[in-house]
Length: 99
Image (cartoon, rainbow, N blue to C red; front, side):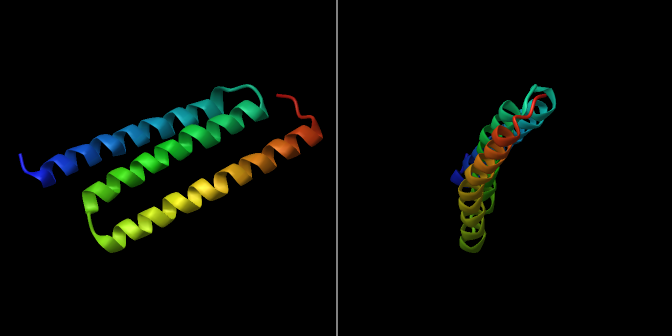
């Protein structure tokens, strides 16, 4: 096997793993009972899934422009999701929402 084939296979596994994590996040959004646990399901596994997909796509594409764009996507996602989750949790606590 050549190195490019190995990188393609590792990229495929990372993309499938990321898709699985994103699926788990979606199921968690539907199944969990309250706002705070749903928020947890919407942020942690979804971001991990997206980063795994970005990593897998970067391994498959291997072009400098594409990798730079994918790095920016990953960085912006990791910067904005915690802030959004914090604001949702703060609003839910202030309203004292119940399921």
